[in-house]
View 1 (cartoon, helix red, strand yellow):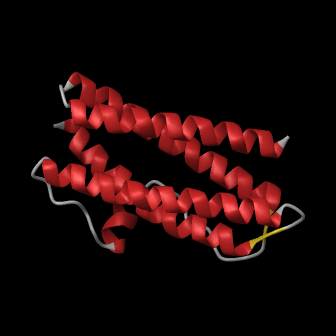
View 2: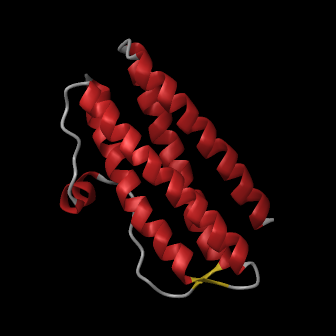
Length: 144
């Protein structure tokens, strides 16, 4: 099934984003520090829950989820960032770009799973797409 490989990529992206958003959480600076600090914490907590959910979904499909940072970095298409002071605008633009990338991948997985008759994956990924849409709206509103 084509979407299994995409699930592994999605899993890898979640792991890399968890580290990346911790970086932003720790290093954001500026007048809206608390809002962005708390917002990124909410996101990485949710992504960590999703990491477990996607790994369990793979196990339900008799697949072994990737589980090392080396594997995640090999499969992920998330760009890492160096630790440094990050402005509010820069932080939010990074979050937005990654959420858009994840929404696109989640949509692809949902649609391919639907074509392949994998209704469990469709149900989970419809929720993921909605989550990204809502948070992209939040970020766009914060960037105005």
